[in-house]
Figure 1 (cartoon, helix red, strand yellow):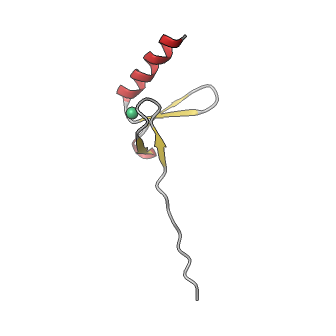
Figure 2: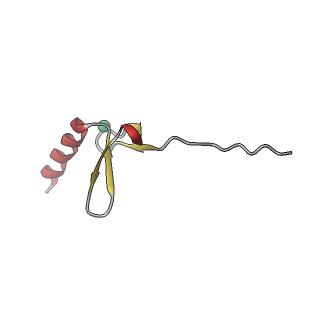
Length: 56
Ligand SMILES: [Zn+2]
């Protein structure tokens, strides 16, 4: 009998601002035009937002 091992990978995302890997459950998600972006916190979201404003 073969034992089927189910590998449950925790859903991880990469923060858009600091590129740190964090579990999706701890991430802040922001819906962009076509997709959802994730941040490890509001600090990172602010950082990213400021960067975006500067490039425009
Ligand atoms: Zn971050």
